[in-house]
Length: 275
Image 1 (tube, rainbow, N blue to C red):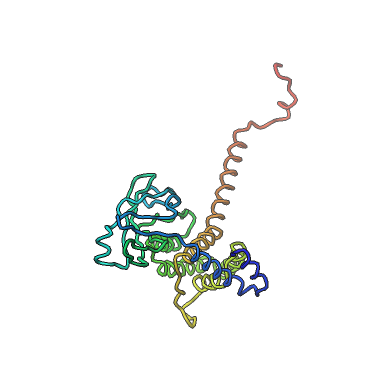
Image 2 (image 1 turned 135 degrees about the vertical axis):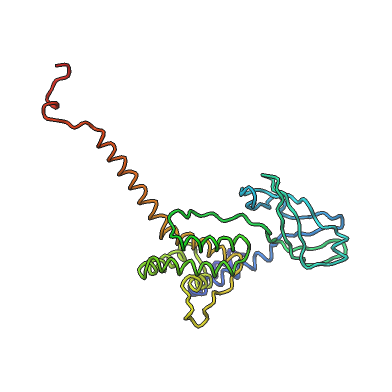
């Protein structure tokens, strides 16, 4: 069904094709959503239990997680909270992983949960800060801290401040290069018009705009912004820094080799060994 729907998108204009594709994908995910519930015995029943894996916030390894502590069915029926907490165990290091589920429905013999959970602790995102200017490094570190904490709109605000620091450092020419890279990224990643529009507002928006605040984003859109910011910083600083360092190292070893070679004189060049 999803394939046939995507074929029908070919007749749409390019600007609306990405939005329509996102809507079709969301509709398909809703129809094929996983079933997660707590039964009357207090057991967590998950259709895709063997495929539940995350990046552990403790050992930072992508690992399967196993339910360790589930709320009692009787307690849930008595208080009927809208959200519940479940503790998993990381199969790689054994550390506890705390999650939060939204409750969909309270039935007589089961508590139906939303298929997606929220990680209370997230593994910190990594990035090579070696070649970044001090101000850019400080701002992007705070942005990553916001992302790891699940504060996605604060993350978007910090990404804008990071981008402004980058443009101030690189000048107008650097800002235009980043704008061109953003358009290239849209084509490479197949971003929808909506996602690309939000990216432009976050990175290039200013206080002089009619709506100066960055747009609201969810976790998926925050992930897109994160990868684009990493790519922008890598292309602007890290790639250039690594290339210059590699050239300097090669030049150093070339100079050392040249200094250690004995000079060849005309007399020694024509001499016969042993005479």
